[in-house]
Length: 327
Image (spheres, rainbow, N blue to C red):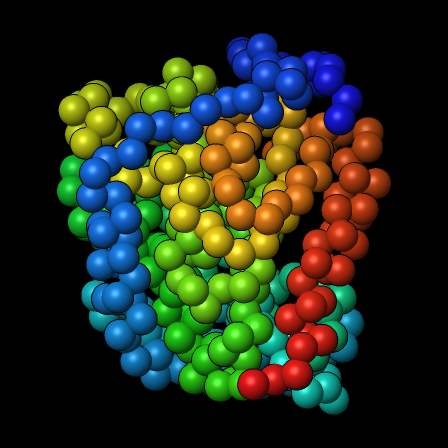
């Protein structure tokens, strides 16, 4: 790997590399694990997996890039109804499925650019965002990430992770044959949620995390940014932050990953500090691959080339799901 700092001209009031070169990023450590971390998340998982999805899908009549597009709604924990889209391959058997988790920008329309055969893709909006509005939850990242932070059991990020587990419930209810052929893809917020989703759900066989947030909380809270982490930095009550965030730290959750992972991490990122991204990758003990991007959440000269190259590799990585014979 090239061991150089990445720098671009910018107008930020801080350095989005935070002074780290690639070699330093590859050695960022993990946070200290709460004693009940594993049991906390196993309990959250058991609650989510017990929810009956009551899934409803409706054909939009649209087909793009060989994907039939369906509106999709299903039940999650706490009686919350999750909305999103389901992409089904046109005139193909479905042997596997992928659940895709969005970033804080949400989803206005499903991404039909994926090239995966014999695979369905569920693209839900997590609670409080897009098609899953909640009357007391702001969709603004600055406020969304603070919702119920005073109680780790009620913290909205836990609910968002349960929304993804319940999405897998929905997929399995529609396509029972995919039970051993399920993958995960997540960007930014979705990447951070995905580390927990995949770490504690044995149904997930392959995972791709792109510039994931929530890494090494103590470290990232010292790094100013434009992303949701800035809301946590600005939050006055440090005791609340210190009690809750250790349970929502991907550098701790990553050690629970047991199936193959593919990571796309940035050396320069004004929204998700690169040391936090790499802390989760470094802590992951399962089979893993890494694609290093020059930047994340930022336009740069090599952006299209790098993202296209990574997408092809991720599609190859995930294609094993569709290639398997359905159970």
